[in-house]
Image (cartoon, rainbow, N blue to C red; front, side):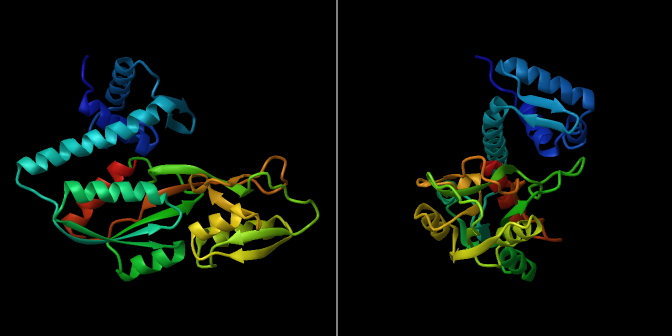
Length: 289
């Protein structure tokens, strides 16, 4: 069996991150035609279409998404092997802040792998809500921040690096399984504290659309919000990866406003940050993509 070409995989990652073949070309130092040819060869090698093309750019197919995860891990392992052979190691202490909406199980697995692979690297992890994280990061309380952005703008042509969105998912109106909202009654809304950007967005959207509502419960974190939802206390706006047993999308038609997508992304690097911080952010981005 012919092995996958790492440079083709690197080009695939660049294309998906940049959103188009043209924008990816300067990232991998190739012409647009060379990028197109690499993608053609990779699709031929895999036996699957990896990208869908439209006027808005390109997006990975289901097969492309599966390969993308493998590609990021293979490229990270290749880069780390070169660093190891050159005598470079990851060691030191870093502070990482993560949005409460990110999957805790996935984060735990990642941190576990990092601990095994880089025993001299010490990460201090805090789970925070949107505006609190932004403020703390601005004060320099953390080295790396993983945030959730609502309705994010598409990445700029030629943009690169872990500050660009690496995972997008839908928002949904959710409640206990089988729950149906009653027309004409104020919506019983479940939220996180008002320091949460999703709380602020949800209230603003309902007011703009003149949807009668009342905050029925304020949870301190996503886990508490999930418990309140499963107990049937009301309805919330949540990202799809925060769905859990006992919590489901509201069945249509529910009469509530359409919702945008969100993107999980690393906050932009600070000017003059330490090389260790840059390397760990890149490693995290490659593992989480």
